[in-house]
Length: 285
Ligand code: C5P
Image (tube, rainbow, N blue to C red):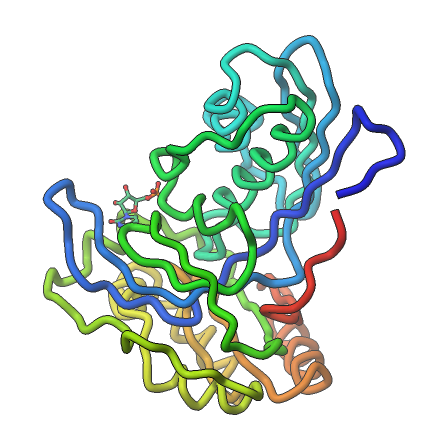
């Protein structure tokens, strides 16, 4: 992270993509046990912070409509978890859709914790999973296997960079609505040891043997997910991320991904479409 002005810092909040999402059980408190291979995209939101007397947030950017600037925003809740009184002005530029399965709010909260830890000289709080199950995995945006309800995150080095297209049909999907339609049964986890996958095609081939168990319940909540998967049918693998409705398509190279993104954008100008690289370098902060 670098900045000309030490009192003004910037962090990147990348889209989180679940390449797999196995729902392996349900806890007594209703939360679900997961086994998920997670990567991050090189597209996402950006956050800036500067010291101020009080804590405040402005939300800008193409996906800002409807995002609250008040204390309910996860950015301000994360800041208050770190320090109940310190002041900062935060500016969030939203490029990720909300309620979309790409962890936008969680990635924003994690970026806030990284940023304010520098600005305020505070430690990142230990109990971030209480703010949101996806926040721990977003604290270090890199490929990882995530288990428990999201609190057990183990780095995974066996993936190449993955050229991809992300598509969201601009229909918000509430995560609890999808989990509540999930039939409670124990689905198998991923294998204990994950294979090392050398090329995007190898990755797509192996990932096709795994699942997103939330796809079926998400289709019941948002039938448009099937149109999104259909739009990505020329990909080596097309699958939903998280609880939807965003789906990703994996392509053999960046040119093929860019071509697919252009075609889908032209056919569905109302959809959010991004050509991206998953598991590549993050834009510098
Ligand atoms: O933790 P977060 O606020 O992101 O979760 C939203 C909702 O999604 C939870 O209230 C719960 O209904 C569901 N959920 C779940 N199991 C998880 C994560 C989320 O059942 N591992």
